[in-house]
Length: 221
Image 1 (cartoon, helix red, strand yellow):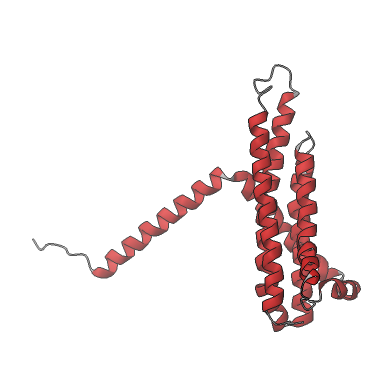
Image 2: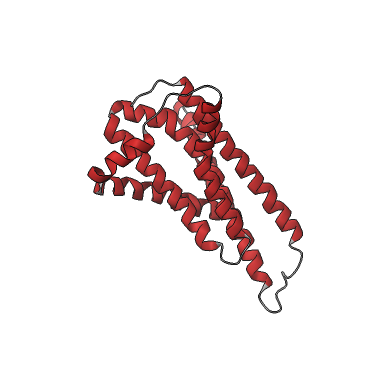
């Protein structure tokens, strides 16, 4: 009998299939371990889509107001850069503060759901404005100057939303009669503080990235 020899092409195909199967298994395992984070990511993406659709619906009335808010301005030295940094961090930090405070109550779930959607809607409106006002230059401006800091801040807010829901549910468990989870919240609160500190640091990083990009990149609009 003649021995069958596999061709190099079939060997490479089998290797590719094993790599693809391993990637699918890792992705599924990550999704299963981070179901809450994936839920908030879906809310964020849904908010971005809603913002784009809202812009298309009311484009004529939004153009003038958004032009004043979103038109890039040249970076100034000294105090001007400080003001730019404060402006870049202000909105995400306000949303982070809302998540932090509502997470310390049993009513944190609505805020945990609303904040990612609201932030995604704002990003969708901004992207749509730059696409409509600048064409190819607007697309380049969005890709290079808007999305990088916005995605860093979005990741921080998604992490914070997951923490808000977790802490709010833990506090709610304290109110249930005969609950086995009563007491022992100090370690959970320390973890809550640590993760919100990380989120605040990421938002500050997003502000620094936004200021640097405005200084280094040319003005497209």
